Structure formats: C-alpha cells, structure tokens
Length: 75
Image (cartoon, rainbow, N blue to C red):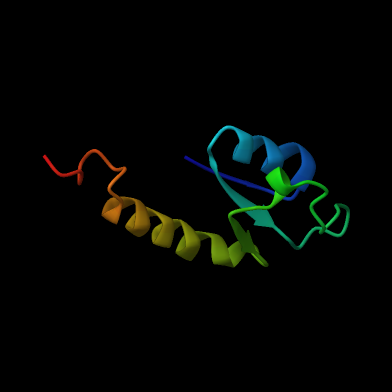
C-alpha cells in the first residue's frame, strides 16, 4: 500500500507508523518541508504530480522482486 501527501506530520508520520509506503508531495508551500521527528521522514519524495506514475511503477517492480512478496518467496 502507498500513501501520498503533502503533510509530513499528520499524513507521512501516520503512514510510516502503520508501515505504509510514504510518498511526500514536496511542492506545497503551505506545509513544513522539515520533518520534526524521525517518523515523519518520507520513504520517497516527489516534486511534481507527474513524477508519481513512474515512482509507483518502480515501487511495484521492487515489491515484485522482494522476498516479502508471497508470490516470489522461496518455497
């Protein structure tokens, strides 16, 4: 599961604490760009909406190769 947001504290921090892949939309000028706590550091950052499709495709490729993916785990 992926979650994209521009709010480091509320959304990115919450996603990280739940084990959800966090994607920070860094183009917002209304929100802080500096995480206040370590759990607010996003796993990925995008600088424009157009970057999201390629990033999601890359995340899917990584997950497909991951040993955590039950479809590709050793038997």
